[in-house]
Structure formats: structure tokens, C-alpha cells
Amino acid sequence: MEYGWPVQKRQDHFKELADSKIQEYETKVDFMDGVLLPVWKIPLELPKYRIANGRTASLQLEWLAENKNSPRDFFSNDPEREEVQKVQHELLRKLIEDEDLLRHFMDPKTKIEGFIILDHLGFVINGNRRLCAWRELVNDKPIEFSRYKYITAVVLPIADDRAIDKLEGRLQIEPDIKSDYKWHALANMILDRMTKHKLDEKTVAEFYGLTVAEVRENIEKRSYAEEYLKSRNREGQWSFVTDKDWAFRQLISKRKKIQHASEKKLFEIEVFALMDEASGGSNWSIIGDLHKHHDLIKQKLVEEIPIDDTTIDTSDDLLAEPIRIQEARLAQAIDQVENRPLVRDIIKDTIEMQQVLDKEKDTEKYVFKQLQKANQAIQSALLGTQSPSVSKSGVNSVINSIEEGLMTIKEWASK
Image (cartoon, rainbow, N blue to C red; front, side):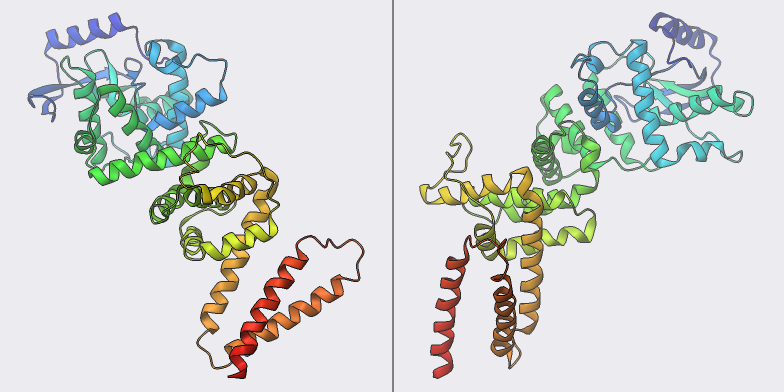
């Protein structure tokens, strides 16, 4: 497979086409002054993929994470290199496999509508995935898919990267056979464009048809996702968080309602523990329940998770108030790899129990029913005292708590 002609050969071909004035038709592209541009028929092998393609932003970072011996500027150093173009083709192929584009273009009834857009050097600004699909089909069955050996294209006038990025943003919003960006690909692209072109939030929002609030949310989600991946030794593996978009949204929303820095960090680590297991839409409603019952859940975690008197890292923003040291130590304890499964169980069990209590609390015999359940639990605990392997750790503190509660209920019942 050929991944684009050499630059001089590409430009010579463009000059020949311009001199020949053999064109399919003219079209106006919403670019710079919106001048009419010729639509030409070009060989499938001619274009080069645009390496700064927004849809592959996360895939490139993931590739770099998996190929640690490759230079960090592998994709940015020289987009002309055959090796770089080949890797970009493989990344695009992952996208078209996910989107079933190959099946779409294998259908004999499918017509090539529209055109791909190239910059003045022959890099694809719009149509990278289509180009990848056509190359795959022609490479596999050149006779059957010979209709894709020549494709229509528009070549833009000379322009800077910022103008190209702005055009890409507008075009990718329009529907045809395009799919939505993966959320982290959009977030990585936004951050890249803001950094590269020194764009403010308002300008980048206009680039991609977003609101300023959506731009901020994407950057914030990306920041938490990067932290989550690092904590799981999965740096750069963005596909691991594709299904966690809603979870990060919930984390951002609920975390903002917490006042103290140490409790914010604790909540974040608890959510990360939940993310390790649950996935998808409605499952993330548990994060709202975690926030709602956080004080009770924190109490249960303190009772069941061993907390060492370790030194707290004050370089983080945990210690906004000295009285929160115990909270910071709990956060460190529950973030231990060996404790994460237990943390998930405690959170889910506590929420489930509280949901049952919330349903029953307005019934006439609520107190009686809860005491019955407590009595059954105590009878079960009595059986456990007969086993020599059962630990006594923490038992007395729980008994003291039960006795205090019973005294209060006795006083209430006697009135």
C-alpha cells in the first residue's frame, strides 16, 4: 500500500491539473474568502494523511504510551515520513472498524458523494477515514473495488495551521457519514489547539461549534481522566476511559458541591474506585448516591479500612485545614490497590442499605423493624464469636456506638 506520493510529485501533479484545466466542477469551500475552487480527480495513492487529525488525537497518545521506545515527537516531527503515515493509517483503520465504514463502501450501491479536502501540500484536511477505507478495499481487492482508484478532491490555497484547524472544526460538525468524536479525542484536540495556537476558550468554542462551558468541561474531564489513568498505571491509554464520560461528568458536578479540599480528594478517590468496575450510563447514578450519603459512607470506611498514621503529602491541596488530616489519611488508605475492591463493596452496600431505609422511614413501625434487623445481625455476630479465626479488631468501638444509640432509643421509647 502506498501512503502518499513524495511532496514534489504531489505538487507537480497539482500544477499539471491546474494547467490542464480539466476539472469535474467548481465548488465554494467555507475557507478564508470562500473562493470557488476546482474539484479534481486524483489517484488514490496521492494524498498524505493529516497527522494533526482531531479524531486520532487520543489514539496517537495511546500509541506513544504503548511504544515507549519511539520518540515523543514521533507524530509531530515529520508528517511526510512513510513510517508515520503507516502508523496513522493503522490508527484510522481502528476508527473505520468501529464505525463499520468498510461495510458501507463495500456495498456496490454506495456512491462516492462529495470530495475530500487537501491542503496545498496534499495533506487530507477532511476525509482521512474515507481515504483509509478506500485504500483498504483497493489493496484487498483491486479489481472489485477499482471504482475507488480515483477520487475527487479540492486543494486549498496556502494557509496557516490555525485557518486549517478552524476549517476542520466546521466541517467535522456537519453530518454525512461522520461519527461523533470520542469524548477524550475531542478533549485532547481542544487542548492541543489551545496550546498550539494560544487560543482562548471562546475562540476554540467557535472553532468546534461548542459553548465555552462545554470547552471547560472537556478540559476538566480530560484532567481527571489523565489523573485516573496515571493512578491505574495506564497513562496514555485513553480507550480505557471511553465508556466513563458520564462518570467524569458526575465527578465534576458533585465534587464542586464539596467545600473542603481533603474531602474533595477523598470523594474523587472513591469515584475512581467505582470506575474500576461499573461502566455505562445508568450505572454512574451511584456517584450521585455516593455524594448524597458521603458522611455515612466515610464513617463506614473509617470503621473497616485500616488507616496508618502516615505522613501526609502537603504538596497536594489536601491540607486546606489542619482538622482534615484524618480525612487525608483515609484518602491515602482507600487508594491502596489492595483496598479498592473493599471500598467499592462498602460504598455499594451502604448506599443499598440507605435506599432501603429511605423507603421504610415513613412507615409506622420503622423503628421496630430496624431494631429487629439489628437484633438479627447481633445474633449472627454471636455465632461468629465461637470461631477462633474471627478478628476482634474494632469490635469494642462498634459495641460502644450501638450502646449509645440504644440508650437514646430507650429514652425516646419511655416518653
